[in-house]
Length: 112
Image (tube, rainbow, N blue to C red; front, side, top):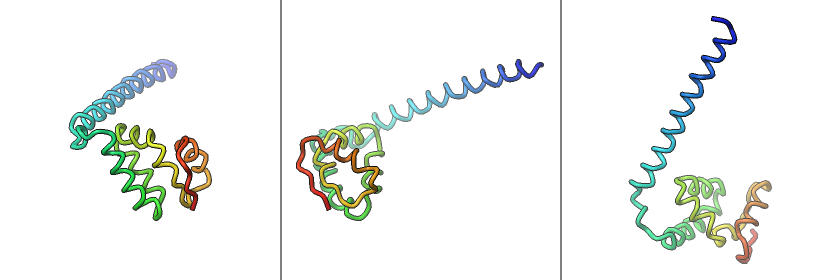
């Protein structure tokens, strides 16, 4: 087998492996969405819960708040769609400030 043939074979295997990983990722997302204990809660309720949680943890660590938005796609979308969750800008890394401003939309800002 030539080195070109070997590389082509390796590329073929890599493509198949990547396709399987993509399928696994999709199945995990579907499982998480379908089996979530919070899936039947209206977005408004989750947004209220996030608001309470945000007030409690953002003062200590902005990264902890960001971690909440990474739990699942639904939580992330709900959090990103609620401008009030992004309008209370505590001490954060400076590179996050423009994103917080954008996400706060027209909500009044609270800078600390």
